[in-house]
Length: 447
Image (cartoon, rainbow, N blue to C red; front, side, top):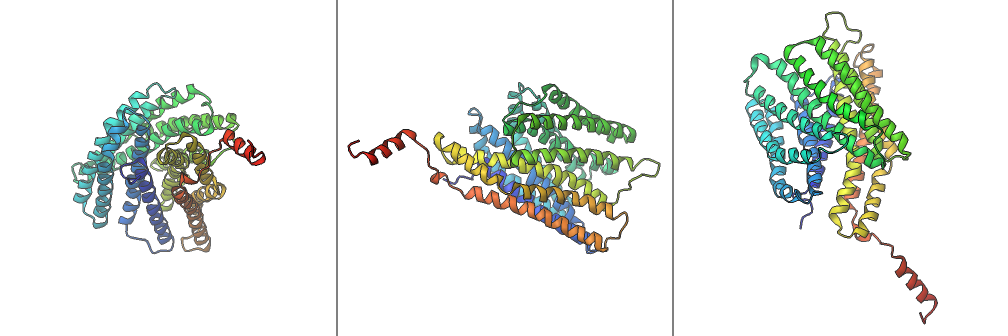
């Protein structure tokens, strides 16, 4: 039987494949922009939507199915529907990208409707799973449901834009669509997942449950008010709520940092990526408020152009989202493979440890490549305030940034392929009594 058909691993590996391919397209866009040979504008739409729909959405569905499969009461229903869901999700993603490439918004709208249907089909299971985990001390179940609502609303708005149902309010709708998907769906879901996963990875208790519960209440509430600011075009309200969100994210980061410090854990690839992702999340929130302040009547202290906006978006896409994905996969893939490929409880532990050791290899180079590569976007944006794009400084900074990011992506991809190719058949389970008996027989023939 094919191990990948209809399994959570199918979604996870395919989602990572979309992330990898769209990341390469993004690097090509950057090189073209700096060298004065920009790629067609539709390539940016393809790049972003391939990451968010083909990559992030599919990875999150894979994570949901993996969670459902650990629940004996719901695993059967999830596994029956996942092959259809997998095919529909990827077909809709391809159709969406074709629509952007052709500039045909009707095709884009049709793909959006299919995506809404795919998400709606898994929404009851996701909602029920969150409801069953309301007793979690951090209260993250509400955050998961909030992210699901944001995703559905963001998709509905995108379809309305594609079919020109809200043409007079297109600018507002676009702003709502972007923030519902990036902040309401992706960011909130990843914050909830990190709150849940990091203590497990560190084998420690969360430092403060009170702080965690406060963050879980303030973040979605603040975001809902932020949406109100977008709808009413109240810039001062948006900036005020942005400040509250920064404070909330600061408390969230402090809680995770204290958890990491108090655990005494030496760290691994999963915990390192999750902590670095938290650092970039703080930067992302601060930069978002700075970008919003550019719309104030007075002259901004830090003007933002296309490269500055690219630096901000990639703080989110690479610094926060991709680092979080790497952290979750570094922990989750060995867990899923160990449970899926062997039924022997004695073999599962050693096999999981072997896979985890592979995911931890070269993690310093991997982390440095992704982190410094992300900061490279900020350096490029800063340099363009003083130097033209064709200057030697900007060109060197561009290639250093690209090489750093490629190094991080290549190492992680190679390790992922490595663990997928490792079979549990070579695992030797230690049996002390048997070994002792055999060694005694070899010494004493009468034994």
